[in-house]
Length: 183
View 1 (cartoon, one colour):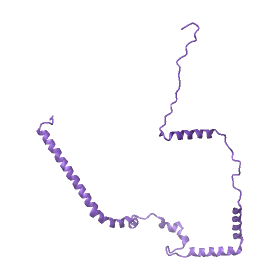
View 2 (cartoon, helix red, strand yellow; view 1 turned 90 degrees about the horizontal axis):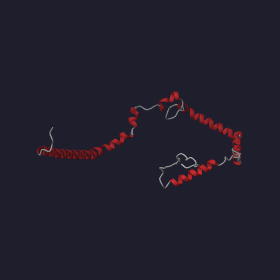
View 3 (cartoon, helix red, strand yellow; view 1 turned 135 degrees about the horizontal axis):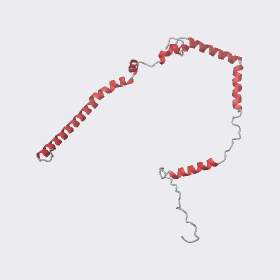
View 4 (cartoon, one colour; view 1 turned 180 degrees about the horizontal axis):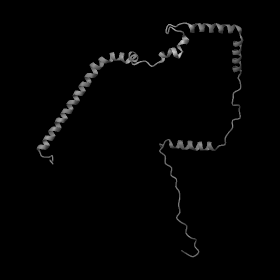
């Protein structure tokens, strides 16, 4: 150290930030630009919406409301609505060909629970379309696929037996030549 020299500073430290990406090369520039744009948008000041948030009534909307009022106040139309309502009520009260009860009774949970209850296994089996399909598929299974499966199985068994015979022959030869070590 020389006279008058400033003291030497301690070891210099630097900080390095390394960013890695597992994005494919072809998509990385797109996401980089997208993130830059979102950062810019995020830093912009909030723009308040100054227009009305609820749409004003339109002329067609006002006209349809007026037509509804006209229908409700027209006595001739009221009579036809009353007639239609009475006919509907009469139809609802009649027994139907399906239930033998009135239509309104079908929607009473106390009386219609069985209609919506889970069917039993016997009912499901009777309705199962697979039982009908099976009657058509079964001859094909028995006459074609079962024979192919048996043939493939026989071929596989034959190959296994041949391989076992070859291994047995190799073992006998190895023992005869004294290649196997005995304890």
